[in-house]
Image 1 (cartoon, rainbow, N blue to C red):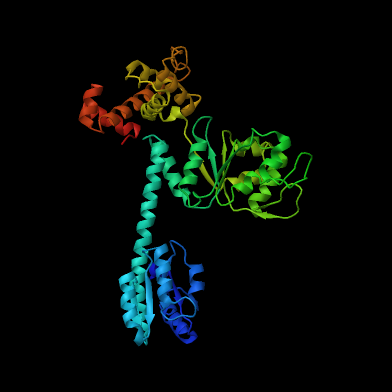
Image 2 (cartoon, rainbow, N blue to C red; image 1 turned 135 degrees about the horizontal axis):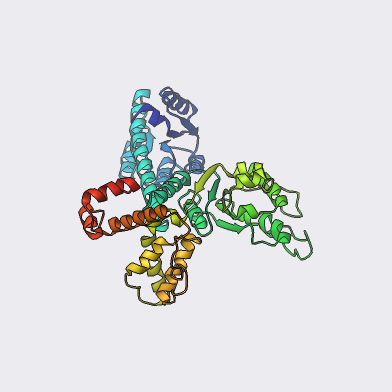
Length: 446
């Protein structure tokens, strides 16, 4: 491991002798290894949490809780945390016992600065590898979870999942833009569940669904007696989201007076309940969603420009279903399986004509509309409902565009069903492999 990588971690020294503590700090800091020193095990316990980015070097003999008890407590919380013990001559037998209990190493006093640095570097190497493996496992788990929930193999959905993975670990506020039914709340929940805030609340507010007279109370809360009918204190949605994620759906419909108050909350991360002058600190990540162009609304004076720029730290666009038609067969299959299980009905058998209509339809209601169609198919009541009630669903699109969209989606579905075998897909589509290969390149399919 490089020196720069080592310096990203730190060493916590637990030693009540100020001269020994200072000597250890100086030896390590001369090697650019960050250190922090405390003089008791009790103080060390408060500084070391699960996932502590470093190691602990502790004397065995300490006032109050000794080094052995500290070792047992730290390893009970994090068995992979390297703990190095410093011992006097008479404590060697105790240190050997500590090694059996899980200590990383021990150093017998007096020791040279070079030996201390050598032992610490080995412990830091181990800690860095442990934390990297944990981070990789968490990222893989998050990725698998996101892929299972945001279904689709299209390049557009790959980009969405990649963006969510990149943004999940940050504290940046996010603005999601997508048409009605494109999955904005699902994307927001994926961001929350893949983030370090997953243990906190995910609080959703539909900004267009609250009576204007109750918005302030619902969002910011109120004290008892703040207005007629306020019999007791109410914690608002923003405060309830502290430690977690606040999701603002249809942000474009938030009344202008509330926008002004909310901007202050975003900037200062504090709020005041109605009827109170005491500021309340809130620590929540804000994810806003809109189906319109907020920048355009701001330019027309219908949305506060400063709030738009404050929300738009990171942007997550969601594609409409008509732009990722190759995902329709997989989504429809998933929805019919879910619906069949929910309603206790059999899964509808494959139907080429049904799939042709599903692929050709423009889906103004996006994924939500497709989900409704899947329910109707399982229940056997799809007739008379779009896309089955429309003879020419693509009539309002240029012919070449409609043909290309259908061809791309059909090829993508065939490749998925044939495990991306060029030969089998070409045979099923009844075209030459060279022709299929050219079309795969043309449409950007993998």
